[in-house]
Image (cartoon, rainbow, N blue to C red; front, side):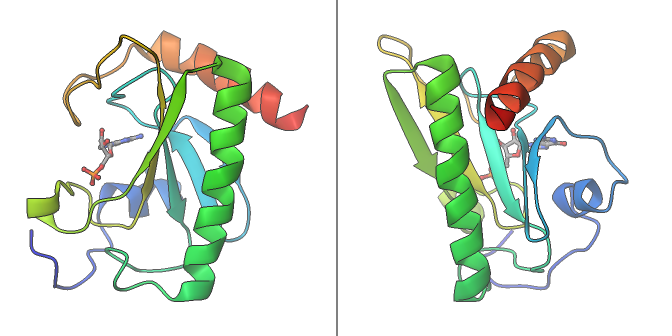
Length: 145
Ligand code: 5GP
């Protein structure tokens, strides 16, 4: 998929926003949704997406909506660090297929990084549902605390 094109309302993240597809939700407000990546590249790999903006990438979202996504990204980074105690935390965002984008609804990756552990392969290995569920419970509890 190219950097330019029409927004596809049937993309998987749009389906998740509409409640048509499931997710391991961590956080939601009027503008932003955050949930666990189904194919995590490290423990706690989280995605943060705008709910109202039909934006495929960073070029298409208005600055106000992007600011809300970034504020939630910071919140999730803090929660992940508090709960999982990683040695680092990576925030990433890709625009266009050649840049690594595979889902064409703007999203931020928040990936805890642990010393001595390389980054897993992108969008390759589906996590164990029971592990995602347990992690979701821990992070939701930490967010509420
Ligand atoms: P991108 O490659 O577009 O930057 O990232 C898309 C991310 O979405 C990947 O990390 C991939 O693992 C994740 N992903 C793909 N399909 C699903 C899904 O159905 N649910 C969730 N939670 N994550 C998904």
